[in-house]
Image 1 (tube, rainbow, N blue to C red):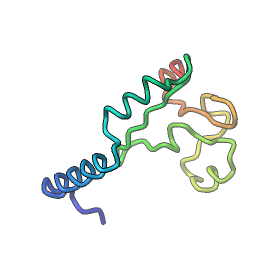
Image 2 (cartoon, rainbow, N blue to C red):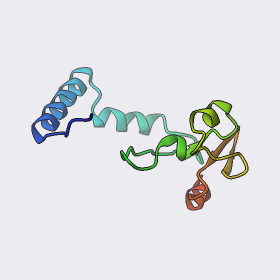
Image 3 (tube, rainbow, N blue to C red):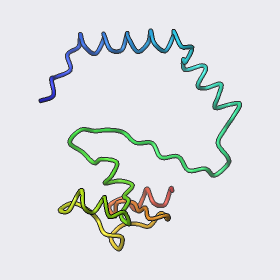
Length: 104
């Protein structure tokens, strides 16, 4: 059972994460500086995933449809290779996301 995240617990975790980031020197400025000095190549695809519990998950977004382990793990939910929007290398995008496929 997942406990509800209280305001107090959220603030404690946020504070602990901030202290850890400050102690290691990994702040936003350091990350932004790295992005400026070592950018991704032009045209490199970037997929940003958000976790929304109870919603769509990563294996239902970018689907390893050619992988038998995926089919075995989700016998009732798995998409077949013919159903997904092909991305190459045995991966496919959820068929309900044609707009995202156009941006890939």
